[in-house]
Amino acid sequence: MNTIKQYMTFVKPYKWKILWTIVIGVVKFAIPLLIPLILKFVIDNIIDAEGLTAGEKTSKLFWLMGTSLVIFLFLRPPVEYLRQYLAQWVGSKILYDIRDKLFDHIQKMSLRFYSNTKTGEIISRVIHDVEQTKTFVITGLMNVWLDVVTIAIAITIMLTMDVWLTIVAIILFPFYGFSIKYFYGRLRHLTRERSQALAEVQGHLHERVQGIPVTRSFALEEHEQDQFDERNKTFLNKAITHTAWNAKTFAVTNTITDLAPLLVIAFASYQVINGDLTMGTMMAFVAYMERVYSPLRRLINASTTLTQSIASIDRVFEFYNEPYDIKDKEDAISLNRVDGEIEFENVSFKYNDEENEVLRNINLKVKKGETIALVGMSGGGKSSLVSLIPRFYDVTSGSIKVDGIDIRDVEARSLRNNIGMVLQDNILFSESVAMNIRMGKPDATDEEVKAAARAANAAEFISDLPNGYDTLVGERGVKLSGGQKQRIAIARVFLKNPPILIFDEATSALDLESEHSIQLAMEKLASRRTTFIVAHRLATITHADRIVVIEHGEIQESGSHEELMAKKGSYYDLYEVQHLG
Image 1 (cartoon, helix red, strand yellow):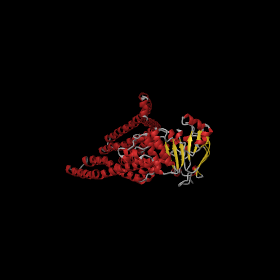
Image 2 (tube, one colour; image 1 turned 135 degrees about the vertical axis):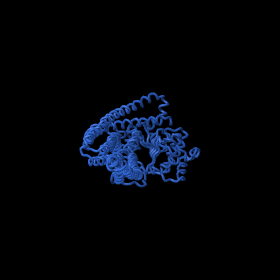
Image 3 (cartoon, rainbow, N blue to C red; image 1 turned 180 degrees about the horizontal axis):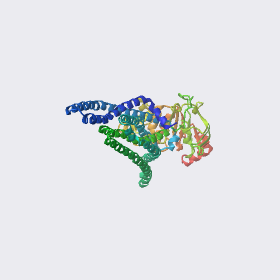
Image 4 (cartoon, rainbow, N blue to C red; image 1 turned 60 degrees about the vertical axis):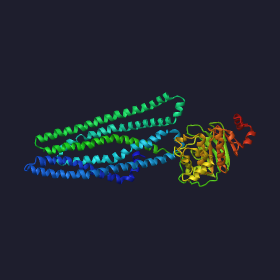
């Protein structure tokens, strides 16, 4: 679908307001068109008028100026205010609607998309590029038409005064058309390249700001400066190329603009000398040249800004049209509260078509309330397996069923409503502790939040924070320790109270004391729920109902801790390596 057509779907709800803005704008721009007529009347009908006394001329001038003053002092200001207010209101509303839709789109994109796209580039499109599109509304849909109507009215008035002089005045118009067609096609392409280069700078900057501790710890400041300079220089080169082409455009079009009044002055002067034109008409014509070529210059400027705006529209809708990897079927059913029986049937999975499978022929049946521990060497496919349960990715082949229903046949959101996850690196938002716990249930009461914190063994450290539950945790929870962040993450799962739990390396990065506290909270949370635990330290999962060993994307062994130790296979070897026997 053409990006301009897509953009117009956001404009359509405001079409009547835009029309009113144009109508009011025509009135606003038409009023100054009276000035050359007033000038002509003053010269021809008052100053050069024969048979009138000085008093009569003064009286006539007084009435003319008085009427003009009323129009310009009392009519024009409110018209100007209304036009400006309506134009900006409509533009801002359209941008609000687009950003609203884009945020919804962002939340539906798969993790595969985010693993291949820089956060800074997404932000650049949602903030910078969307803002740039406002020009399309205000200039392209409003001001351009106002300038065209202004030119049309001015030319009509000029035609009533002198046809041949009007033809001379507009004889250079075709050259404008040619120059615009020649220059602005390339300018659109250059604008897109410049915007992309800027987005890359922003994406790199966003990533490096988050990674400042790494830069400092490895003393990489000079290296990182070179890396940034390289991207910044690319943007500079694109910007200069764009600027050079833009300068050529203005050089040509402004030359045409400057030549046109000279032609009019020359031809009009010749007619006055030969008595074919009055001095008042000549003065009015010269004044109208400014009224014609001033909006024409604005149209040339508008062509530049519109080109930039359209390039931004292309980038916005290129992102907006990014397809969803995970999409609900049209007849997808909504899962209410589930029992928690889960079955993997011949599940194979790979992240991209060109990559190798990370999971092969996984068959696993999990009963309601059972605790399953997934163990094995790093890169074996444990985290990939649990990420398939909430449909962060879809299986490449085979199926996953919850309570006997293929999860691809249910609404993804209703499926995730029944799953609680605690990860190794849980994301906390830079707001209060209470708000971060409430992510599990946004409408929870204060007492429910505190009860969840108590259940997660988090209430004690929260009460010691400067502002208790109202303490701001900083970006990604930077003000809290690893153990504190994990307990808040567990608290929000307690608050959500789901029938299915997934713990993905939830304690691997913690000290033994924090791990023990969190282990107790996890065991309390897992009681009577279907639970998957991905663990590196085997001592934390010996209590599991079943331990599944995954190596190279395949299930190697399955059984209780005692059964697997007796087998003396892969699990036994892993256990011995960790000196836990």
